[in-house]
Length: 180
View 1 (cartoon, rainbow, N blue to C red):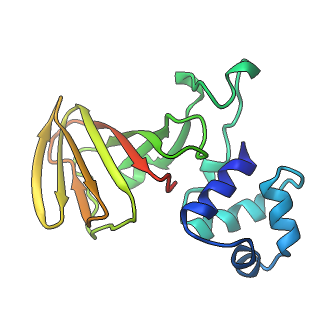
View 2: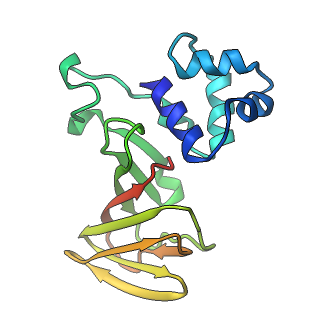
């Protein structure tokens, strides 16, 4: 699964094997072998991949499944990959089995007062559903206050978010193509 995640991240960012190899100071053959699961990158290599793709290194861990028949199909609640830290104000869990599909599904928990201060803009289509709490999202310069049961969608537009409430806001977030 690690190999597939690295391949999916490379493709989602429109990078070639050559560009990845150049940025990592590795050979194209080595990167290709990692993507095919023939070579296992060291922890240092995983950190370099994480920096290159601007993702937390924790994304590359937690691929265990209790039942091999569930690999790539089922993610059990206790085995989700956690991304982010409570210090950042945003902790996300990857609900998708991997990053190889056409979208990723995340459970995002926004701490009270947490906010994304600078607009993000990605070449993606994104949608979300507020499970609990209050959640503000700015899409293309317009702020929207959302509460439990509300949802949103946007495509290729700058966005920011904040949790104006005193309780965590939980949002199920869909991103296509996967960017984590």
